[in-house]
Image (tube, rainbow, N blue to C red; front, top):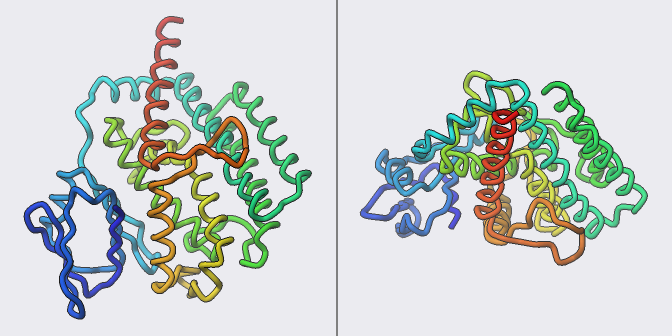
Length: 334
């Protein structure tokens, strides 16, 4: 269950095994913590400290969203799992340039493969021409062939960036009615970017939780380099899940549940989803968490494989662990 708290007059208290939501204009609600999978908090409601402790003990991740976009979103979850051998292996692979490059190339490979999913949405929902999709698919295929020859993290990032630019150009051709001309953020300047930014942030919270639960060191990434105050490894894993968010946004905009009045604009805040429209977004996101398309499939047929979002993310995190083992063993036996 996804719990969204977006009214500042709300008070959240902890009672034995449950959260109690109190608002002055309606009866209090009690939600058992065991039912919760994620909590999203907007603005500044009153939340007892015991609530955060109980959620962390139950391994329920929470995300604090800054409504005005003036501060970074914050994530709250339980601490690192006690799997020291995994973290030692992660540090070995990150400390040696060859190993780091191999794992970074794997992250880019996973992202490039995942474009098949939102591309399928463009074809089925928006009727984009076969010639245009084939041109993009050819660019992806050519880039995949170049990955093994990349000599540095910067060159990998450059290859990934070229494909990302082509992808957003394709979206700009498809979504001109929403004022989308390309990716922008901090702040987002149009409804498409507003939805993408919110979706990527929610997905990052899900990925971060899985990374911590698996026992990885979140600060140490491969494609994303170390940077003070940033957890780089969840960003690495997020790359293969951006396609799910892209596909989600394409479907949401096509559904006609949102229109231009669902967003508001401020010079300093950019474009934001209105409070009235948030229930539509989060109801659709909650459904995605339970019935999520996998980021890539062997074909782009109508029967796309689905699973729960947590199952898909955990599977991708475990594949990353196996990739680290493979890279570490190859280097150690060479």
